[in-house]
View (cartoon, rainbow, N blue to C red):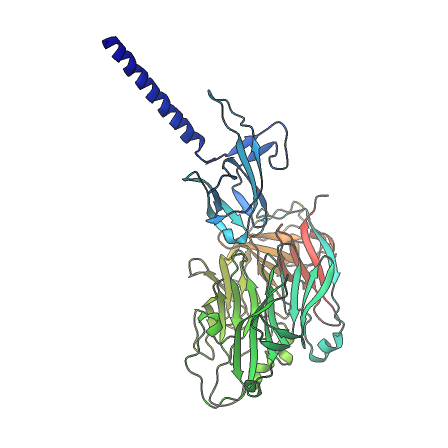
Length: 553
């Protein structure tokens, strides 16, 4: 009997042990995890022959992840930057490792990187499946694919098109520029405006999006007509157009006030939403007090110009609102907003608020920098409303001039909400890195100086690139400055062209080394990192658009 009990006990223990092993095996089988590498003999659309976990992503990229991800199981959530991804397709793969027990197949999924996942370093990657959350290696997300911080000898310039308006005489009469602000989206579509219209260049064709005289009705059935365009910008994804307009409206307050609207247009539906509507008194008799410049966008006094967006869908603008004053009219101010001077590059309203501001996606506004010449305002002191924005949303640069000739660059760290370095005009030294092997074309100096002219009558002589560097048109070349390392190099053109004329550098297209970049206006980059610029900006010298990109010969 004792032997029977012992045998039963052993059987029970063995059964319990087997159950624990089975439970553990089931638990392991249900555990999600990310693979860091995968290879197979035959590649496919989802799984190339050799795959490595993607550590650096670009907004708009289609990305593959592999592992035990359970994409078709109810409750599974895969997130990047704390944003659930939208899986566009899946596949199952055979494991390529050896174990003592049979292993289940791996999951491969594909998704598109979106701007909502955020731009920057250390963006989290997680999978939650079967009640378990597992973290994969963090990733960096970039707005634009950046090249190496050195001269790219394969850069090539193509001419895209020239824009000539049908009503060129209207621009000539008032000496308007044909382009007052200009931007590009991730696909390389170009959007630009002037006092009389907003234009786009897409798929090889120009299209008028809005023009003076257009009658509009916004999403709340409020009717108005466009009198003048004050500025515009496009989101990087190319779906939303922001614009500011002086309006003509059939309302009683129109007799004594200029009326301005900051709007956004959904380009797919053409729906217009008024974000802010502001009145500026033409002839005030008392001084205005308690002007609200921060907070809910709909409640503020705003005349927004110099519009820009970043990858995180924040809107930036310079507010030139003119508060009521006890004596005198706003006629001089208006001449720089709706009058003759307003259509010219390098002209800036005065006797007004001059405040660079940021509006977040929730519609909350914060002042960043301001010129306090006429009215008390908010933010870091500057002496102009011109600024340069890092499209990734990391830095914004304002300008402060001690003599109205040279301008110091004032860095603002957007995520940290803090002032950064000051780049003193023609004083802050940058170590120059030469990559030219021919002594004839080589830059011989070992340092260069940072110098910008934001109010230059040639638009955009400097812009921020997506990799955080500053690109400046200097003499015949494009020069790149890396501010954290205080180093510089020639981005395009002949190195020696920074301070002399090189006879061979006389082209407008072709290999970028031989292109003369004198007088070009910079626009921005598309998703691949290609750079866009234009030449010419008057009715008698219409703008020609160009694309600068790597091209293997």
